[in-house]
Each structure stands twice: as C-alpha cells, then as structure tokens.
Image 1 (cartoon, rainbow, N blue to C red):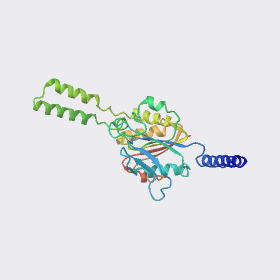
Image 2 (cartoon, helix red, strand yellow; image 1 turned 90 degrees about the vertical axis):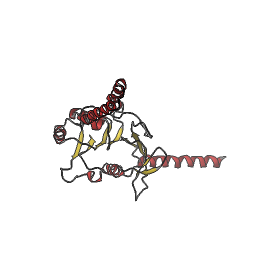
Image 3 (cartoon, rainbow, N blue to C red; image 1 turned 45 degrees about the vertical axis):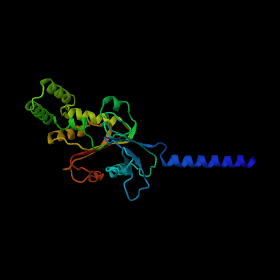
Image 4 (cartoon, rainbow, N blue to C red; image 1 turned 180 degrees about the vertical axis):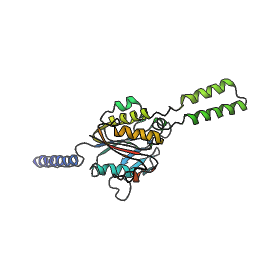
Length: 262
C-alpha cells in the first residue's frame, strides 16, 4: 500500500512537470488560426522537416499538402511561433458540395465577423471568391449578358414566357453585388476585428483595377484601413518583398496585405 502511494505521488509529480513543459512550449495558449475559403480540414504536422507542414484533409479523408502551407509557415516564423506545436486551426467555406470545413457559413457576413472579436492569432484570407471578389471586380456586366443570352436561347426554342421569367428570377437571386472599393476597405477592417493583439491578418487575391489599387494604397497610407495594425503592403510593382511572403504566394497576380495588430 505504501509503495503504491509513493509511485502515485511520483506519477503526479512527473505528470505535472510534463504538463508545465508542454504549456511552456505552446506559450500557455494554442495559436489559433482561421483559414478562409477552404472546404477541407487542415492539420499541422511540425515534424515534416522536408515537406509542407500544413496538411489538407478532404471529404474522403485523403491527405495532401496544403498548397499555401509555405506562407503560413513563414507567418509562424516571422512571429516567433515556428516552434509551437499546439495550433488550433479552423477552416471556413460555405460551398454546398464536398464541404468538410470546420465552419460552414458566409465568412464575410458582418454578424459572423463581429461575434469573433479578438479571437484568432492568424486570420488567413488567401484565395476567396464571392463577396471578396464582387466588391473588387465588377462581373455584373458579364452576368447580365449571359442572362440575356440564356433568355434568347429559350425564346428561340419556344419556351413558355412564364418559364423564362422564372429562370431569370432564379438567376437574379444569385446576381453579384456591384464592385465597391469603399465596401471592400470596410470588409478588410471587419476582418481585422477578429485578430488578437499581436496577431496577424493576411489577405491576397486582391484583383482591383489600377484606379482602385491607388485608392486602397491611399487608404492604407492615411490609416483608414487597419489603423491599429502595422501593415506590410506589397504589390507586383513594389519591388522586393521585405518579408519574403510574396515570392511564396501561389498566384502572384495582385497585391498582398500582411498586417500585425498592435
């Protein structure tokens, strides 16, 4: 009985020591990451010395390297988090089919962003469509032309006018929003509200036309965007990227924003 008690005390002592070590390695709290517009789950494998450490797991449980893993790994390195092993990763996507993301909602909904105030160490917005694109790039003209062509096709094939109208009504429900640089800037600010102090917001796939790029750059310069962040903004014409993020980006077809909250 005495020996059992002694062994149990030793067990508790070593367990407490191990838990303290693990806590110190993780910095006390896990690094919490939100990855936008990715319909798979993502796991972190820091032991992958020769390969990408962020692994995507799709709907049929097939694992493959996350194609933007090098950027996330670089962000960890830039913030001294490269030795962290305790990462809490959430993916977000609202696509209807083959979606196993952790959060399946419209991530650009104002209510969603405001309910996650100061929640994440990294908010990663690398490759989005929907509102992210519609507010930048006006596709409405193309959409309306395609609707007109569809109506003409139905008319040539003698479709009932009521049927044609019902099809047009369905398409109008999904009609893109007009591009709006001011709303786009507001959207970036809302994304920033989800980032913790000392955390990071990364945004790419910024496809603004030249005029709107100039407006975005002026808004950043005047501190009207992410005013409580230190912003590293890089565009294709800006020369070498001091953080080395742009060269890792898979698209390299538009500006990127790397912003650290104060």
